[in-house]
Amino acid sequence: MRNDSRTLPDPLESLGLSPAQSTLYTAVLRLHRASLAELAEAINRPEEPLGEQLAALVRLGVVDQQSGEYFARHPAAALGRLIAERLDRLAEESRQIDSVLGSIRPLIRDYDAGHDYRRGPFPVELVSGADELFESIMGMAVNAPPLELFIAIPDHRTLADFTRKYADTWVDAHEHGLLSLSTVIPVSALTVPGLRDKLIALAGSGARIRTLDAVPSWFFTAGQDAAGLPARWGGNLPDHAYNFYFVRAPIVVGVLRSLFGELWARAQPLPWSGGSDGVVQVLRLAAQGLCDETIARQLGVSVRTVRARFAEAMIDLGAQSRFHAGVAAARRGWLTEGE
Image 1 (cartoon, one colour):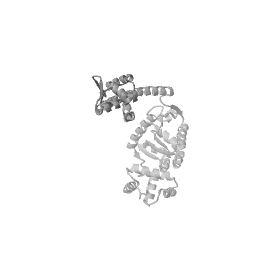
Image 2 (image 1 turned 180 degrees about the vertical axis):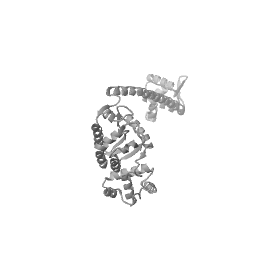
Image 3 (image 1 turned 120 degrees about the vertical axis):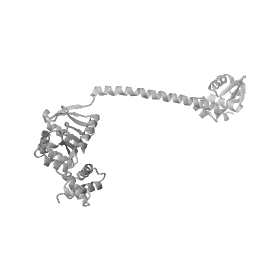
Image 4 (image 1 turned 90 degrees about the vertical axis):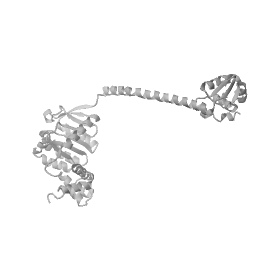
């Protein structure tokens, strides 16, 4: 009998019965109806502790008592009740866990608020000087090439300073894969002496340039977590001695990138060609069946630059592939222009 009494201990114990209760319940099942003395004899144990264990089984609803005898309820009903009670407890525990998780969220907000208070909402640095501006950008490009740079320039003087002192360095940075520049400038600034040649060279190196009637303010984003803002929104840099705020905060970068996207969508390509000279050169050579590496060798640029020009062509022409870009360029006469 003792060996037989061990046939169901594990599932019963998992439902909350102790090993002793499981043994006793199995004995009740096998005898079906028995007195305390009969049960004690069946499992070879004293009567005194069995009385308390039987009382516990009665409270659990798996054993009934009548006229001094104990008899087992049908196992399906008895265990079904235990399972239902266990499921209720699990559901209550799940609700308690959800409640704890819910209470953690405001605690996390408090922690973040305190952390931000100690370190500042986000790092902001006041930078002064044109050289410092361009050196900061080039430093980021060297550390994490190619640096995706979006920049809006609203005035002539900034572009004149760029033409005079910084354009060649940026063209070289593009050629070496350090920069990936997109910029919008006012169309009226195209009259700045020397700017056209610098823009042609910059576009030829892979930069994307468009014009607007008016650019609302100077700003830039560099990568995903750095941005530059003017000392006063709506102004330009030269009027404020090239003072600007350098901000490292992804949320600020995200807002400015969205603004740049809106400006870019309304802007127009440079007016003196049906596409930058560099883009047209790449498309013409590709139309001859040349691969990227061969095109790069013929033009004296990097393969990265060739691929950047293909990407610019696809954007400007609204094409979904290089093939479609070639077809669209041919329809616009880009591939035969100048022949």
